[in-house]
Length: 295
Image 1 (spheres, rainbow, N blue to C red):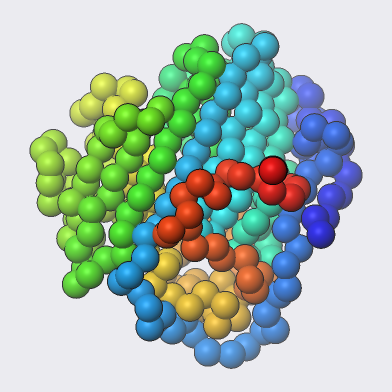
Image 2 (image 1 turned 45 degrees about the horizontal axis):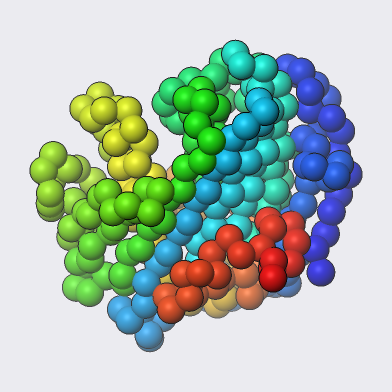
């Protein structure tokens, strides 16, 4: 069952209330939450034999962009409306999420209302404090803003990253069905190909380097892939044995809404929210972010 909570209309900058999803609601995945306490994260015994997968789809037209993301840990959606110059309405949906507090990051997306359309997805991070947002919703919203600015009809990203073996793997990205990027990664670094060799495979700094060094379209794709490299490492943990986000608090340093002080303390694990798409990439984005799978 999917839960829906009514929110106010987000048209116009500074509007009160939350963002309105088509049909008048923002949506979230209820799941079952862990009781507080318990052990910290434990490594999965089968790690090393699977593949992290992420798919992002963007569809534009009629001054509107629909953006969707799914991976092992998340199923999110963003709907954006614009007037050709700036964002006039934005809404988010958290169809599947790892922590009970993640839906609390839907309303802060409203802070993007009124921002000018921009070619770089990172522009959203200059409009609002990323630490008050869900990282993945904000990234998706940034891609939607850039999609609107470019006037594109469709764009799709498909990412696959096999589990690391002795710290090494390959991270591959296809854009619109065509192979585009293949990072060889060794622990925290990209080791090939040029010009990516020597850059971090996760963490800060890569986005600034990519936007300063690469053509805009390639920079966007590279940032999407590098972000997934970091997220993919979560596959090594038996996440349903983690009671809450506070178990990772020291690693994250308040990087997003859920890991912020005053929120992380109540961020319980949503048990059963993880999926494994190793052998079933076709299931990615097979359903609506707040509904059942499409036939």
